[in-house]
Image (cartoon, rainbow, N blue to C red; front, side, top):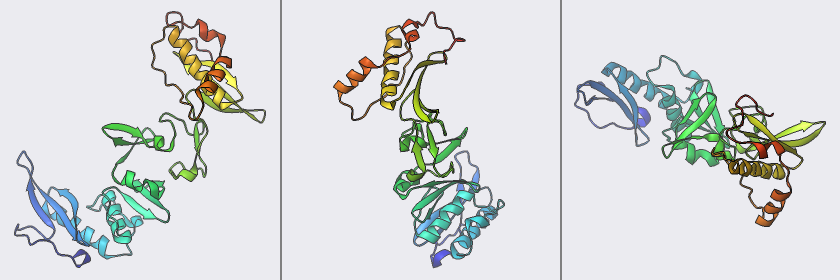
Length: 284
């Protein structure tokens, strides 16, 4: 038995490590579980006692044989892959998590599948050990207080930011979310850093039934404030869209007002009205 531990005596007529149960509709099923290092571990629910017992034996083998690794996972195993990760991490590192996390050297890996794993700093362990990471459309997110939250927002990256334009993975690995590997290129809404003739400039566009050019600026801060000014002009002209404003951290109100007054935006924005703007005539 795993770790020389002992399960409670069972008089259920089921194989070792298997316990019968009944669903609300009266359908019977069987739970598999074991105890390792004094921790009771559920291995899942199965339609037959034989399948549940196979899961129990597989779990015992994983915990008893240190030569078994994640690379040895078999698709025909009665245990799902995420259980393999959880059990092997507990065996090798002495830490039990309900999430498919495996600790490494100054990092940990969160497995979404045998072929897809994300890397994180140890500082993020508490957060991700209590949350399930999901993937949809190439984006990773967690459920946080009933809301779907993109994991990139944890690192100061806007949820709708685009890799390569707004941020980049320094080592080229899009699964490596360690902070040292993330570089934020564009901090503000509507602002894109572009390189022209060897020099950077910041292009500002605002979406009003299409992307409209606000202007091009040498300074990122000036560009961010120009976007805010464009928002104010459009709202004054009758647009009711809820634009996100740029928050400029650490800038004195007097300095913000000075830049806001001086910065120029496209004159065409002053003429934009909801009733006259065309869906098919954006200015890029």
